[in-house]
Length: 439
Image (cartoon, rainbow, N blue to C red; front, side, top):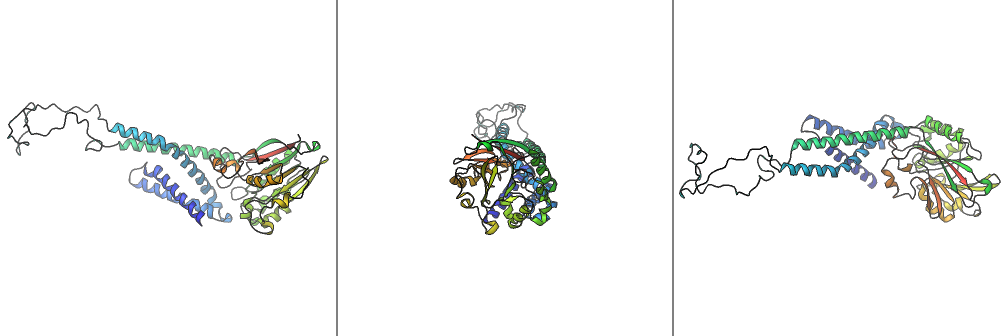
């Protein structure tokens, strides 16, 4: 409940900020400002409605809701980046407003004479002003000669120019809107397009010479759900089959919904082809979607589910241990049991190379204690939307590509799908062909 409350508070603050910068600062009091406020309020309500509705009922909200989440994020990023230049521009306008316009005519000079000490400071009622050059009484109050221009805020001299400030706010809002829309549009095109194929060679010190060149087609985070269905699975399966890989590893987060909702969308996985088998490990989203049902369904589709266990791969006269652990977020019993590294990696021949399938890269800290040579992971989406990759790095030791954790090599694929907004910026969808090389 505390986390949900924090998220809701954050959403409220973000939308208040967007309302201030995009509506309040850019409109005058009246109908337009009221309409803008209502629109921002409706968009604010759309976010929790999209995120909190069940997957079976979310389809009519999915596109507008998730697209607004992406636009909201990039509007926030761009507007925050504009805060400093906007503050500088406002300061310049304020200082300029304090300078008297040089086109304003200077006041006529007034001659002052000694005069009679008993004279009155003000002429009698109804009297006409004295002509220019007439001496004024000695006690007439005049401003000091060095008083300078009127102070800011004085009558007839405003502290700033409202028209210029309004123009500045509108310019910033237009720039932020166009930039956010452009980034989001590019991100949608990237996310909805075909995954790119990456090839990476990784040397394992213990790999037998005969197994040099063993290839593992690796994919993660397919995320079948309200915005991705059967055609998405078919495209990924066709792409993997063209690689003619020795092994196929599906490293978690296959679905965002139940078997009843998405079983038909996952059916094409039955067509995966490889020489030595196709394997699957659970990701955190399987535990949100009915992990017991999905483990049985994936097994029915012909993929071997490695749940805290390992499989010997006999190929080309050598042996490789392929192990898999449940996701680190698991905390149930039976098929939902937590990750057990000892069960998957203990009591094995240490002279053989071992490749571990683990959804989250952070699992490498435990895997390294068991001498794992290579861990294949997903989960991060490569950050999915820059600059989220910077935040992901605070939690995961490797965000994308090949890294090393405590002596264990870790390869993290970006994933072939997306979660939440159908947007990928700086982290294109990916299927990876991992080629193992002997020293």
